[in-house]
Amino acid sequence: MYEPKTIYTKIALQTIVNQLKKTSDSTNQEDIPEDILSNRRGCFVSLHKLDGSLRGCIGTIEAREENLYKEIARNAISAAFNDSRFSSLTFDELDDMELSVDVLTEPEQIYDLDDLDPQIYGIIVSDDSFSRAVLLPSIPSIDTVEKQIDIVKRKAGLSKVDNEKLKFFRFTSTRYH
Image 1 (cartoon, rainbow, N blue to C red):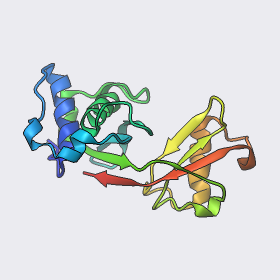
Image 2 (tube, rainbow, N blue to C red):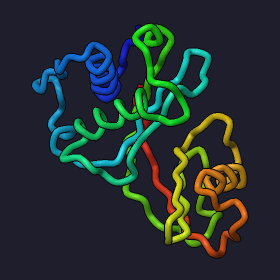
Image 3 (cartoon, helix red, strand yellow):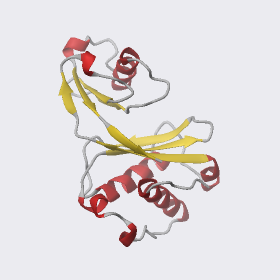
């Protein structure tokens, strides 16, 4: 089974295992750093197979829970069991799974696409109405701003909309394994 290297992925994995076992054991709160219990941040939990292929990824741009601990737990359950692109994770799959948790900074609106770098910044696109999508930074297959914009616009259903009619935001994230 995957061995978490950080407290962030330990929280995510323990939450997923508890859900699979249908137990409510939680990570010992005494082991959780105070900043995880007191800070509110958006985060994404990603599950990858050992071959690198995505198995689930769900997150929040802005915090919805009272602290980062609960935000990670909520998104871990969603990534493992509620990502509509995949069936629910099974216990047997845990042996072939790796986890990561991305903790996001507050998004900032940008007005010049030259202010993007897919290795440094994640991107959010919005039509300021109903459509919005997000793409995390440092995705190995995304090496240009053009590719990053194309993918995030496609995710939002905004491929045919001129960039000038859209709002773009950038953020950084710290990825934990």
